Image (cartoon, rainbow, N blue to C red):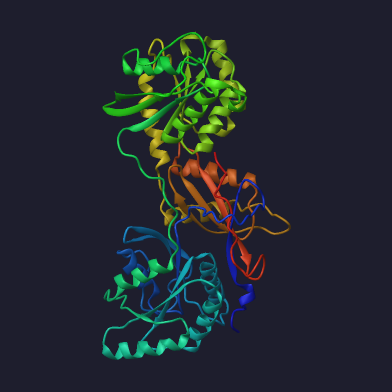
Length: 482
């Protein structure tokens, strides 16, 4: 029996911080495009996948049914990155294990942005090919038809008969010998959506913003690092009004440190010069790559300190927390500080911590390894294969909790971007906040990410015909940050 198009699935982007809040604001979630490679057994899908990847990563054997699971790979062509999903043979009337394999292939098409349908040109269009083509014509996804195993003139003539599938012109390739693979990939890139615009990289020294409430020692730290009275320092809070930047060489690396105005309780309540000073501080943070948040270790943590840390996390910048004025703390104060950190900084326990004294220079040299650690994590990328292998084992050991009487499944995951790391989970249902926090914590344990926020968003599976004509609604980008 041919698969029912009413059961076809699409994926909708979901703001993972607001349960079920799906909007049609047209914003992309930042995930790189996904291409699903499908076809009946033994038509050369995995051989073509290896040809696209430029290396032998997919297992290939001259018997049908070698590939069974949905396997993800990171691919790149013409400078454009995309995720490649290799699938098992898709049979329209499967039974037993074949039914599970076909289900994996159908799920891959549901989560893909475009489909590469591979057919054996020497055999021609079989009943199975026509059944799969009928489903693909109704899926609403761009489909590129690849006529594989075209090695001679006779095969070229055979390939022309594949027009009968109703998917447009069959593109002739030989996955084994590489014929036409480059032109095929050009067609694939035309079918895939354009990637979201990336924030332009700015060359030059790494940019570090010194952030904190008034009078925590930001200007004193800049002066100590610069070895000169670069910024005006006074006991009166709020001396700095404009960002002051300085090129400083530390650890054989040149950094651009920016001293900023102290952020008061709520900038909307500030007036005059203080209001604009706070706006300029936020602008300096947007231009920075990593923020050093200074906290007065000699005083209890305040709501201001926590708001400033949250502001850095929301801006998506790498984070180092420097506890200044350490020379003014005694053993008792340090015990209280540890309790405050444990009880109040639950959203930033991953940030490197440095205990310093800007006036005496105590341990300021430890800022460099902390900054390098945070920036390294901020730019870290995990390969799609490694991510899904790890995630599969994690979910098998600790499945998501039931929701509405059903247990959601994580079908696939990809890292959508870096600076900060952003992961997209393709799921069959909504994942509770506690489980997303669990995934984030395990991500950090497995892959590091010390000193950087980690964003996690979901793309929920929807059945075709629900919520419109089966088109995936677009949601806001991920806001699960930590």
